[in-house]
Image (cartoon, rainbow over all chains, first blue to last red; front, top):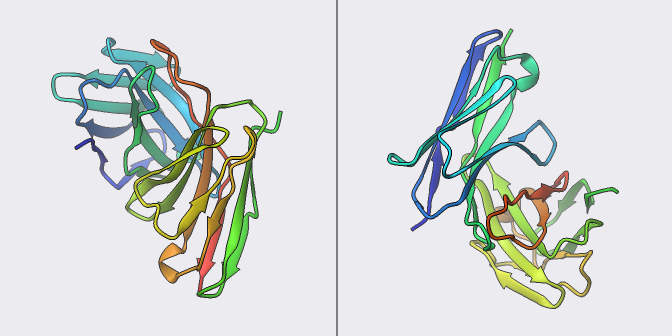
Length: 111
Length: 116
């Protein structure tokens, strides 16, 4: 079946880089996403990558996609305390309603 | 443009009580859904709707009912609350999927429900 998996927790020191990993099972997915959930709030789209790309960079964020291993990662450079949140990866199949979220990774940034 | 709104923000129920969680969106989105979020389990889909008058079950539908009489509103009803329904509930909406297009979901701020 379809599944998207993430590790539950990650702790880093302020100023270090954070790498959050995700594995997915459905190779037909068209887009992969990273959502951020701040405490007490809903999810918001942080960034996304089209499945025919290997990498996407957006300021402090770098998304890497390894289609062969079905592995997605989100790197946050110079992690700040404001980056403390839960990060969800998700996959969708373009043109359909299929949309699957991972279990979420709680990032804690230590001052 | 308020996006996706949910009420109430917090609710405490006794076992056996019923209630309705409200969700509304002003973006004219076809698709709306309800998720529950529990520690270590991520988001689980309860029910979804692909348009007014059309609803379907998600992954964990038992104990919940939905209806979609308008494009804007998608209420979630708890028929007889149980402690296992203690959770944070999120409503989300998105437009009709486009072939070749990315597909962002828009989330409400959530309702924290405790059933004692």
